[in-house]
Image (cartoon, rainbow, N blue to C red; front, side, top):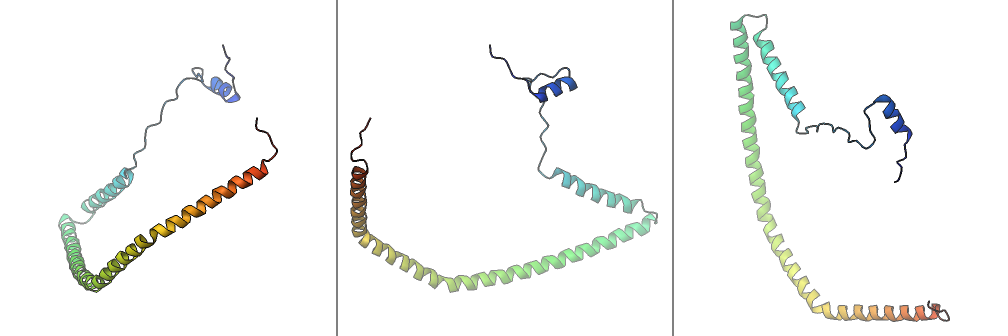
Length: 158
């Protein structure tokens, strides 16, 4: 029976923990969620804290509600303005896209024609090139055999 070698780490662990055994499985750490739950909690906590801070402010409730309404109205107006700007920009982008599409159509057609012409040329010249490559490969193989014979001439195989 083979003996297990004991290293210094094992001895240190035995001294630290009486129940330690080198072959025992270590408890696994819990997996950390990486779906942004911390940042979501931070944002929600900040928002709820801000709302509660406004509601429990030392100002009168009526004044606080007016401030909240005023701020909400300002944000609503800003949101509407941003939405209108986005719509205008989207229309501009659509117009540019259509103009570019019209300009690009002839170029695309010419490119397709050129590609088909190149395919035809390649198909026509494929056989001679393949034959030349095959001849070249055969010449290389023949030369390799000649060099091998010359190099190993006079040696015995075991």
